[in-house]
Image (cartoon, rainbow, N blue to C red):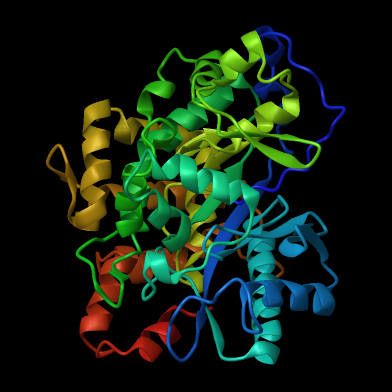
Length: 456
């Protein structure tokens, strides 16, 4: 959601929908040049109270960004004299609407490099926080303590418009914007056929992955009754652009089908001369056909519109997989590992597709809903999602081994699934169930103890 786009005033104009027909094909990568990208969101909290850090003030998020700029040489991105993001060496550190700090890391070849990117990000955050005050950075799918009204909005015009727009369409939209966090994975495709195959499989796997990585069970200082409250919140955000929209990708679908969907989703805004312009009752298709207030569409407008499509997986210049809660720091590499092991190996894709082919669209939608409350206890046509998750992780592990990308110690990328297998799959409890059990048990409902458990 915190996508930062530099709008090029000379960008290519769009005269008809035909001008977009080859858009997604432009970004296909040759075999051997696949990359993996991670997006990691964290909550900054007061280490003593657990409350969300404000954006402003001496112990606020903007101060953290300014210290990162000073200590580590980032280039600040500013809006109305406020620091709203940083960039350096292809990495972007940006903010979600409630001040969640997000690393959008430059795409790299291996998960070993992803791990190094995360380690560096965590080190930098902890270093500057040491100078500022009692700050902890926690990795979870939902803010465990602060309510929506206790969290300050980040002063971005984009978020002001989105808050108004989404607030009219979903009763939990502002909770999504302020209180949730995720780990996302970006993967490449070689061709239209390859992209559609990967997207179709990603959407079919998402309900199982959402259950396996369910991790938002404690909020407002108590166990909330969900394995993934984040997943539940997204269901009540905006049905036109969010969720598990399986009919986008069918057996005979192509990029044009996805494009048609995007063209008919209402637009939120445009940017002209660095000014955000609210659009009303305007789809991108209508914008192409009739213009808007004497403005004509460009490719940059289309890319801005793409950034407002929040389906569980989406096409941009790559496939972005979005359906998982934020994980504790040491488990974050398991998220891209799970997806890369399957989607970047043809044998693994075939094995996963065989495993899931017996499930109908309605089965997957129902499992997605069940996962919110039940996590691993959810079932699909009588089968436990835990058993399916174990099989998919085995498939992924074999895929990573075949990809054979090794670190300096000679270990392949399958090592990043070890903690997932030992801590989550072996005991058969989702991260959220584990957190809830600890909160009501050994942690004795102590805020400081939960912060210690979740902090990076």
